[in-house]
Length: 307
Image (cartoon, helix red, strand yellow):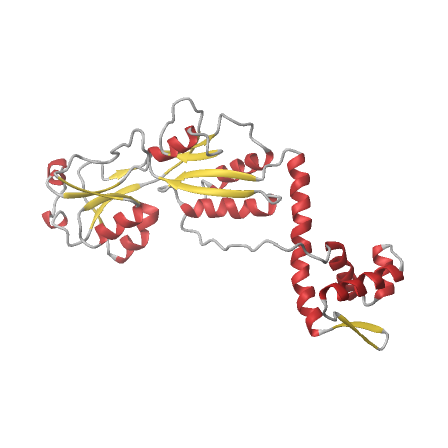
């Protein structure tokens, strides 16, 4: 890649000339001589081979090409300043990235709220979000490739902060044969039916959480796929209520009237890596995840754009 001929200082100088209305005003703002500012802009035009400014009376006015290039340069200068700020923050112990792994059953609306609140405080720190299922979260944390983890399991050797519970509901299509029994459904009734279960993404010791030992079992890779299958009349499953609220309301899915166990409320936990010291950005994100964990899921959320 060819090295740029125009420096960031030259782009800043051109911006000052335009923003302050002339060479003399830009010189005052930049604490430089007017001749230095004039030379810098003239040299830019020579290097680029494109006229950037034209004199209109006593005022320097952008050419069409200059207007396009100046607009692009503002983002370039802004990004360079942000890069310098990030280097400064890293020198003070601020992380460049926080790696967060989350069980796919945890409400994404709460994550959105927490991460949206994190953005204006992040100082350029990125968040790498990864979704896993069941023991997959535990494996990623123990392998040292996550700084924070949200799991429904109690992970041996880690002290987790308890979060809220997530309600799982046993559901099937309204026309499923189980609903036609027109009575309380027993464990024996379920054993003869097709159960849809979500594959554990862990490799070492995958778990069959929620499987009843039904004669027919279909294993799918995601909660969304399971909801689609069950909503099409294929079997029954326990699914997070927050993911199927609309389907329940619209009558596409219907809760099974089990005599026991029709609803489950496993608690979720927030864990931090034991292999590294938590930096300030990670601490802020922990606080926000805990704060928004209790946010109502039925309250509309409006994303706020941050500069």
